[in-house]
Length: 261
Image 1 (cartoon, rainbow, N blue to C red):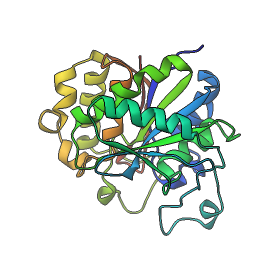
Image 2: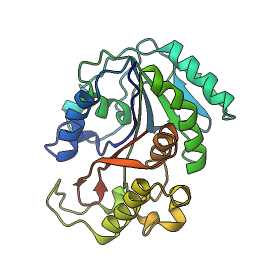
Image 3: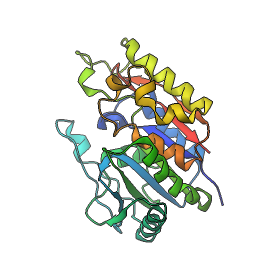
Image 4: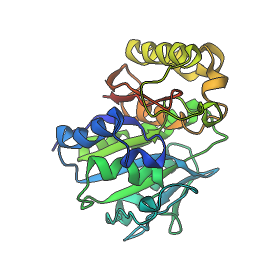
């Protein structure tokens, strides 16, 4: 059975699925490059809970958790089946790791889940389970969450952590340019530091990124969009990662992706 790497992907704005940008092209080919898993577990920045929640639907709904975007987005669905048995297994593993966890029959696929998966596996025929992040939690806790998911990789399950390498929507320049505009130094310096930290396997720097990385606060005013990175890192064994993709949209959103393990 295939052992998949754990992935961190940047999902950007919901319009990623419509925009002609390099990050969309990357996501559109990486599923085929990886092959077909028996199931997918997505740790999404847009699924927020104080304790670990795991979706337990047979047929999870597509959630359009955004406003003011093109009408076409609100008509899109990602009808992948759920996997309640896998969800229960995840809850047991996470609980055994000392993190409170529970099944969730209310949530479905937010855009942090369905936008990248619609590009990666557009047939929507692979069972999917979503796992929450705690926006008030720290990197170390999310690395422990990832470690609890790690054994699933050897069982043919693909772990995808979906967030954003940089995420300050307040700094998006006007007028908006998807690509080709200037990327501020505070974005490039942070992204370079974090990329080197990941590729070099500097664990202490990873966990303390907010204090050690240049311009961390400006790139991530809140942590929730970077927390999935630590889950992917934990699921990959907390070792060095390899960069699969790097690009920028809207000047301030780095769309980088990494594989661990």
